[in-house]
Length: 448
Image 1 (spheres, rainbow, N blue to C red):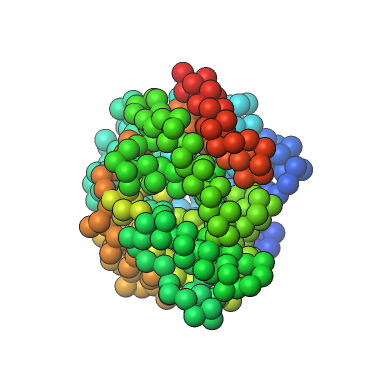
Image 2 (cartoon, rainbow, N blue to C red):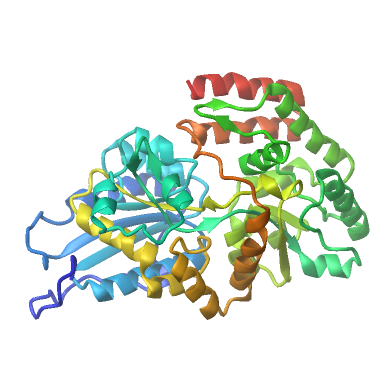
């Protein structure tokens, strides 16, 4: 029973359980947009408030990801319910595309799910809107134990001195490549430490050797993390406090570089790029068989590998590895409107620290935040891609640079702006200089 109570004979026998995986509440498409407020909007009113620690409690839980993540997450939530029989957790999940739109719709009505997944693109935004529950009292009391988490990860979940979220894991960007196809073509595999010029030259070789509708390099010009690492490899940053830390000339150079890469034959045409940019894991080039590389996060290797028959490999992004950093991959946040803050805190602590939960979740959301659990998880991994993820990050950590501060409020909308203006270049609708100017124009209003 939650919190810290033992099961009793009075536990309701009719406690609701979730349906099998095939009937989970996966949200898809336009219809889901209307459904979300109705489905998740009951989070704060599903149970009468009670001082009885054994009283039934229902928690709404919302995240994004693919089917593999959903399987693992539900198994971990099932384990929590087994240990706390008076708590029912209702899960809802969807692909990343549109996730923040739905979360914004839900939150606007004061009905944010009790617990939701968030990343540093939205952390400052939702904390600034007073959507997130202040977890500081629970951290200070030890109800959420962060004593065995890296300090950098703990700090990543803090906004204005408050702990508004807890890191679900640690990861770093990774260039995933189709090892099977590259071997078939008789070409070398990419390597950590390659310059961007070396990467594009290799990509053009792959395209030429494939001799058809297959390209060596993905165009990541619309990807904020690729731009950020490119800047950091030159000793620059994306943000300086609440303002941009790079120049319009920098962004023009970035767009021009990828325009030249397409002209060199290294990257796909605009429609193929758009399909990957706007899609989920199953839409990436290394899965669809349209390209040899995809710019991803290290923890996504396993899910990518389950979506293709090819063997996949992983290296750092092009450029100096010091541009990479160990970041909080995702966070667990609670809703300020929840009627069960103690239960929310307990579930978050469970997901962040419980060894059994860690073994279930593996490295789907990155290396476990709890240091002790990292060794436990690595020793018990039977997924070769998850093992490769751990080995990749462990090998790269000594080469990484210091972590920057979390993005400021407005980063989420600005990320969308980058996608829009970058694709205007990709489709030939704007020059690199004009697209860069438009980005800075919108950034001025977004970050003010």
